[in-house]
Each structure stands twice: as structure tokens, then as C-alpha cells.
Amino acid sequence: MKARIISIANQKGGVGKTTTAINLGAALAMRGHRVLLVDLDPQGNASTGLGVSKSVRGQSTYDLILGEASPLDIALETSVEHLWIIPATMDLSSADTELMNSARRVMHLRKALRLRDAPYDYILVDCPPSLNLLTLNAFVASDTVLVPLQAEFFALEGLSQLLLTVREVRSTANADLRLEGIVLTMFDRRNNLCLQVEEDARQNLGDLVFETKIPRNVRLSEAPSYAMPVLNYDPTSRGAIAYRSLASELINKNQMVEGLDV
Ligand code: ADP
Ligand code: MG
Image (cartoon, rainbow, N blue to C red; front, side):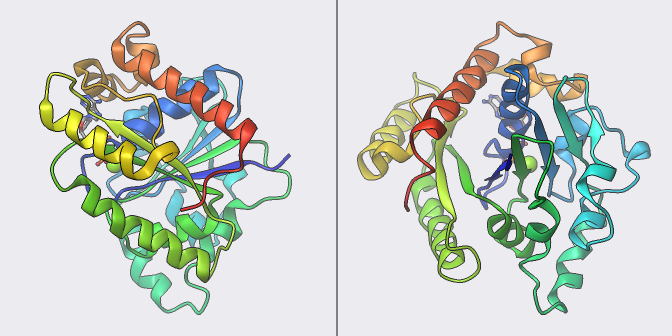
């Protein structure tokens, strides 16, 4: 079976990419799917949040992207059954410049992740907060892009730039790239601006926007310091409920369509 490869991307920092990668990954794993999380941000927040301390990060995404390791050799187990991670280290930030000198510079991650018989159902790539060469590598490697969108002023403008990049990748290195969808994060229904952004997003983007919204929930921000997904840290929290619902929605959607056109 072929893994479905999903980039979790938004060039803005602090919008919930890593939180989504960890908790959506955990929610899918808890339903019995085999999930590999690839930490593609040199900050390594997904790695830390899943309890991979800096000292045990041997081989990392850096080795993966430079073709010096296979995912199967370097994926680490996490505290969640069926969830593995390839951690990131700071040297990943220099991979960007090293890739510049390679003729097939956007193809590296695709080559590493598109294994014929990968023992995974989903591969989630936690992208850095930039539309740089690392993110382009993720898009070229992926089947779909999932965009966490924080409901705030200018959110939709940043989104159009991101969608433009997706279209560029489709017309060059990966014609099959689709959008998995847009998920509203840190949502506060008492905040009028949030409601306005939701209305605009649903009006302009229709089915691309997931029904599930991730609420602002302090348990979600506490969980990483306990090195676990919120689904373990506080399974009944609103954050945990929301990410389980996102996972169900994603699975159901995947059964109907192969991702949506931009
Ligand atoms: P990104 O990966 O896009 O930079 P993160 O997922 O790291 O964003 O989130 C940024 C910060 O906001 C983190 O401290 C995280 O714990 C917190 N956070 C993310 N989503 C939520 C949420 N729904 N409710 C409360 N805090 C959140
Ligand atoms: Mg992040």
C-alpha cells in the first residue's frame, strides 16, 4: 500500500502547524493507522513535543533530505502506538543552502519518502514557517497540502500566496498535488474577528474548509511540555475532541475524493 503524504504548511509561524501535525498524527494513529511524522522545521518543535530530546536525535530529516538515510532506518518510536517520528535538528537549516547546488533540488524529499512498500498509511510533514526550499521539497513529495489557518486579520491574504505556490508546484514538479483542506485553528467563537474570518473563508473556499474548527484551548499548549499529544495528556479536553474530529473528517473525505483542486 502507498502512504498518503500530507504536508502541513503555512508560511506564517505560530498558526498551529506543529500542534496539528502532532495531534492529527496521534488521532490517526489511535484509530489504528500507521503514521510517520516528518519534522521538517529546523526548530524541531514536533520532535520535542513528542518527547524526542535533543540528545537522542541521531540521524534526522537532514540526513533524509540529503539522501544519506532511509526513513525506515531513522524513524523513532513515540509514546503513541503506531506513531513514528523522524526528528529535526538545527543543521536542517543549512540543508536549504546545500540543496541550492543540486540540480534536482526540489526532488530530494520525494525521493526519500516515496517508497514502494512503506509501512505507513499516512506520512505527515511538519513544514517550517516559510515558503523556502524545504517547504517546496515537502510539496513536491506530497499528495496533498493541509493548511492550518489562524482566524485573524490578513489570514486570507497569506493564504493566497500559499495557494499560488501550490499551483506553481503543480505546473512544474508535481502535477498531482492537491489540497487536503484548510483547518481553522485557535478558534474563539466569542471573538467577532474569528467569526468574520470563518465566514469569509467558507464563502471563498467552500468545501476546502474543514467543518471541524480547532478551538483555542490551553491544554493544547501545555501538552508539548509533557512530551505528549493532547490526546494522551487530556483526552477529554476540547482540543483533543477537536483533533479526533479532524481525523475522522479527513479519513471520510479521503474515502470520497482524492483531494481537492485549488
Ligand atoms: P506553528 O508550528 O505554526 O509555528 P504551533 O503549533 O507551534 O505553530 O503553535 C504556536 C503556539 O501556539 C504553541 O505554543 C502552541 O502550543 C500554541 N497553540 C497552537 N494551537 C493552539 C490552540 N488551538 N490553542 C491554544 N494554543 C495553541
Ligand atoms: Mg511549527
